[in-house]
Amino acid sequence: MTFTVSLAELSVFIIAIAFLILVVSAIPALIQLRQTGKALQEFSEEGKRFLSDLKEITHRVNGQVSDMEEAVKKLRDVTLKATGVAEVVIDAIKGPVVKIAGVMAGLTFGLKHFRKGGKENVRE
Picture 1 (cartoon, rainbow, N blue to C red):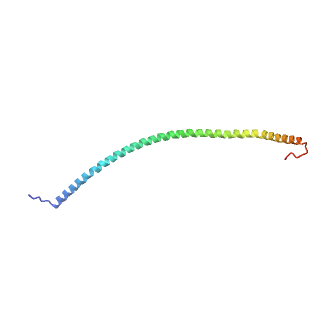
Picture 2: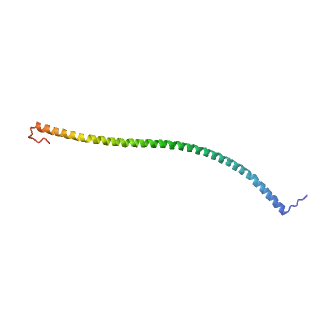
């Protein structure tokens, strides 16, 4: 029994075996690709949950920052008013204090002058 195979048949047989080897070796790669796709999808869903949480946190922080902004504005207004009150108090007290200091200095000079009989220099 002899088999006669032509060159075309041998070529087709070799191509079929090569294709079979290619398919068998591609199966694990396709399985890995499918697993990678699932992992990527899970990662994407986790990323969406993370972004929604981040959006909620950002919204809360923005609300708190606006509350802080109002508090800072009120503090600034109070500080400006306190500064204004301090200036008014200083302006109101400065005149009488200067007058009292002048009167005290005059009384001190006068008392020293009269005590020494008016003949000596009391400025020393």
